Length: 95
Image 1 (tube, rainbow, N blue to C red):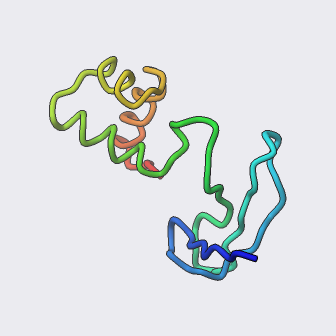
Image 2: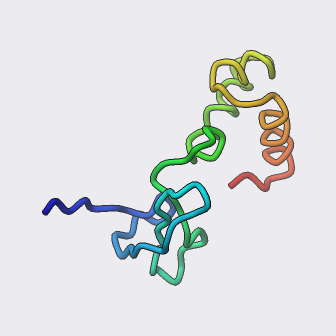
Image 3: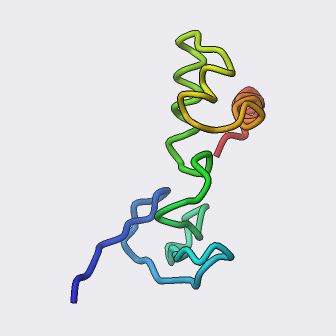
């Protein structure tokens, strides 16, 4: 039997429990740390825009002068997602 150590993407806590599966049959985990703001997460996502590092890449590409369509094509996400994330960053509400 192989055990995989899973850490919370927000607080890096290893106090994690399985929390069922979503509608796409992907395992969902829950962080037991009370101070963690994101208590539920997945290790793999069907949509590439849901990965935590996507927001950072969108912002880096925007700072470096990439257009919305270029960013969407490189990251393989929709242009509306890129626009929404940039608006949220401007408002200070990025995840």
